View 1: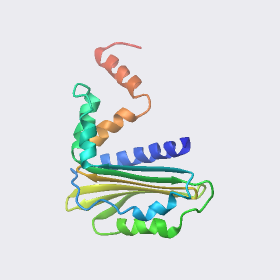
View 2: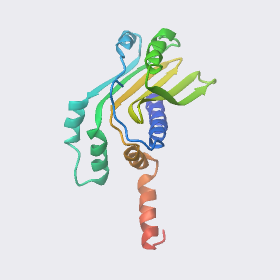
View 3: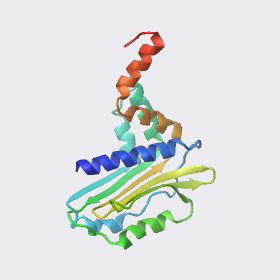
Length: 195
């Protein structure tokens, strides 16, 4: 489980920086992937993560964020434009418990109109493939999809809705290791203090 969380964090950081590098505002239409074909893998998997947060649930969750906390205000602004966040993640005890067809059913959607691959990372050692896709709608982006596949894991993350890359960049800064220490150090430097 720790490895899955570590992989998801690593992939999340890749995704955040990939999206943050875009200078375009984002708007979602038709970016929701059909992931129902993956349901059959649940009985084979030793660990399953299934997240479905649609627009109303995201807006409801944002009401619990503190308007006085700068980071939570930024998170709330980011959530405001989202229509949904969907995650399907399966970990298996044995290799090859899912088929190439399972992955290709997702890739076929991501090869459709509007989607573009932004990031691809392959490891021959672990046989892992990490891919990040964005859905384009003219000069805007309407969704993000992350696909992670290796011999014992299959994970799909699908984010649908309006996402401002600048907001993601700001939030990503707060998730970097030692953020509080570096923030404290910058504040001290700004004030002319020494450690």
